Length: 205
Image (cartoon, rainbow, N blue to C red; front, side, top):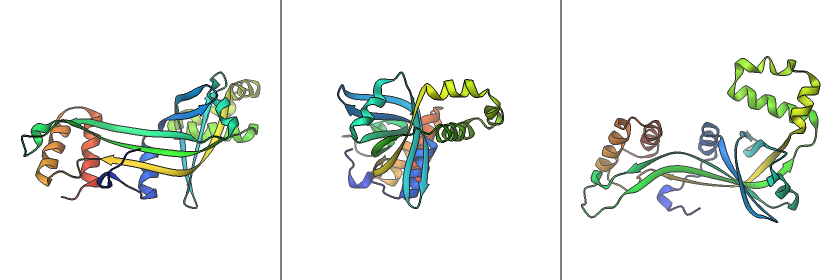
């Protein structure tokens, strides 16, 4: 990912926090049939300063066959983003742009075959997104759970490389950034407001 120095961020904890906050990712693989991508929820772990992703695909989705070749995959975590108008800049000779944050995580997917590990992974995913349903999940009939588990391919990715771009008007004048932040906050758009919050967090006054 093209990342100018002013947009680069390498702090592992910050990147993991962002990935967890925006954990509906795009998984991109390359195999015999070329590039493929699937959008899916991801569990992001940080253990001993190592990042691991846990996710699953529908078994009917042929993308999981790309794992067999041992090729790297890329998971793209992206949001929020917002249009930035040149009317906020001091110089008339300015053009529109887009502010955004994106993190790319690279690693080799490993399929999880063990039933109990697959079930535990699904329980963790439910726990992240639906605590109320979590208590009911283990009481589902075993034959139903087995059928559902057989219909998915669970996998993990040990992340070997993280790339991030926090494009948040870092190169602009403080007064210009404040105008942009004010405009995004006043827009009524949730993604724009979140972009403004990140601008406040990652820029000096």
